[in-house]
Length: 153
Image (cartoon, rainbow, N blue to C red; front, side, top):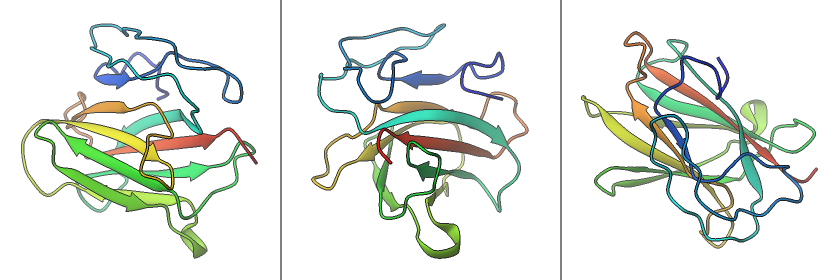
């Protein structure tokens, strides 16, 4: 299901929906029952195109793909995941046969909030931050799949 589908209830996005190439983040928006963090206005290079959850993964994961505006996969992009205790993990989107793919294996058991952000080459946010409640609400899924779409290419 898509980000705005009725089954996604614990997803927080740090920016309102907007056109990829021209909009600027200007404040805080609240989705149904979800707290959204404010984001400083600035250039945003990536926006969340979709988020789904299922069991199509080898364990407990947050995984996904980084694509350009045309939908072609992009390798070498840094994605950050931070849990509610401030533990930070970085992944770089792959090249080769899996170009654009990234994954975060989840080793610890139990529920947690995971904040995902695409970073630029300087380590600054290049996307809004999306906060996911793990495990997914349906109780049967073990993985989230995110697609980050760039505003160029």
